[in-house]
Image 1 (cartoon, helix red, strand yellow):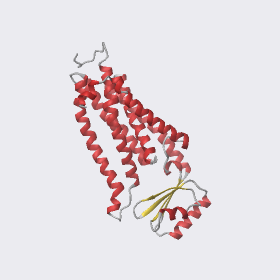
Image 2 (cartoon, rainbow, N blue to C red):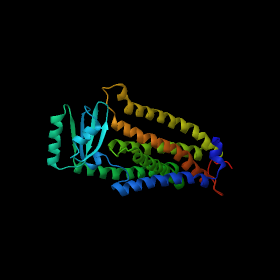
Image 3 (cartoon, rainbow, N blue to C red):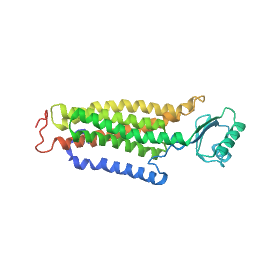
Image 4 (tube, rainbow, N blue to C red):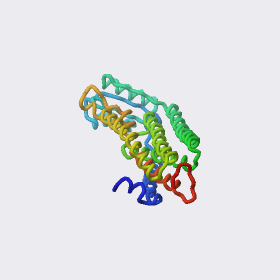
Length: 296
């Protein structure tokens, strides 16, 4: 099927059923996780509180898990020559006993404690700033285009990108951390870039709506393609470099961020060039809709 067929052959309302279905699946995934954990995504140690321990990988993961079975061990990862262990909240006495046991058994162990008060503050900030970023984005887009429907389509597309990326976190086991929050905020900015590119081409240039959408696609695909290539390089380096160079460890923060970004960028291709593009196509081709620069 040619690109022109995808853009212009089928009615916009028919094509829009596809993104609606994907958004519904993402919402179901987030809803199921919320019912099970109290949060739409699995929270990392920065938001739940707990203890993060890194020890030399001198024995198997099962042996390490059995060693600390008496503590709230929630996750264990092999990061090259070391294991990263994540423990849930525990009493001061248990924490002191855990630290003593680790220091007596391992050399060069690293222990980091995250208190519940700090974790609750981070949750409050994340809940506060994500909606604010969407609100500011909507205001800026409206000031640029002065078209409520166009602004709404940009916001919906960005929201769909975030929902898809968040649902992918549940699928891949990536937890919400300070790094993944930053990745989600980056996706909002990137989504606005591609949606504004599309909206500017459709509203400001001459020609039919379908011709202008197809013209914008060439630039948009090149933008997204180069970004995906860069993020894919980060995925390879952060996940597999330690297998080649033993002195390196797995870069968990970068690996999690790049995973969120790659899913979000893939969603942005879909939401910009189907959700937003077909919404603009429907809006601009409505009967008796006179738009400056639009050739009938």
